[in-house]
Structures are given as C-alpha cells and as structure tokens.
Length: 78
Image (tube, rainbow, N blue to C red; front, side, top):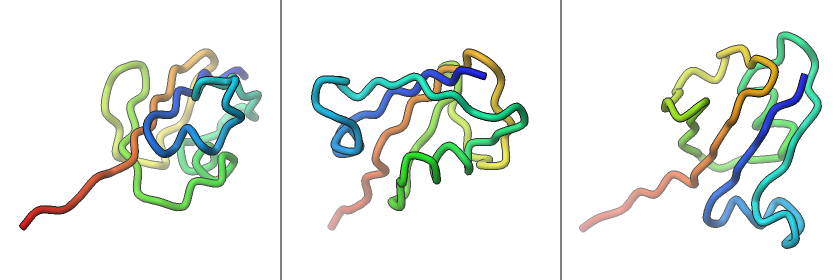
C-alpha cells in the first residue's frame, strides 16, 4: 500500500533536499504508525496527523493512500 508522508521543520532533514519533505512509501498491509516512524528512522518525539486528524496512537493501522504529516514536537518555556 502507498503512504504519502510530509515531514516538517527539522524532520525534513531525514529526506533528500530535493524531496522538499515529501515521500511516498510502500508499506505492508496492516502496517501502523509505529512502523512508519521506525522506517523513517525518527527517534525524537513527533506530532502526527493522518488525513488531517491528529493521531496519538502509534498502533493505529494505516490504509492505502493515507496522508501522514509529522511535526517535531516542541517543548520549552520559562
């Protein structure tokens, strides 16, 4: 199945610059968000949306043609 991935901010550095943070990955049927994060080699905390809905459950199964967006989680303050 095809998963459309868009990475933002510092996560874009995972992909070649010419990709502009976008990639289409072939994943096995039944793959979940955790597998996608591992496939991309992401080790930092991220905010994820699937088809424009924020998703916090990494065990969520992906479907063919899902659009997954990942943002670096930012924390801080005084």
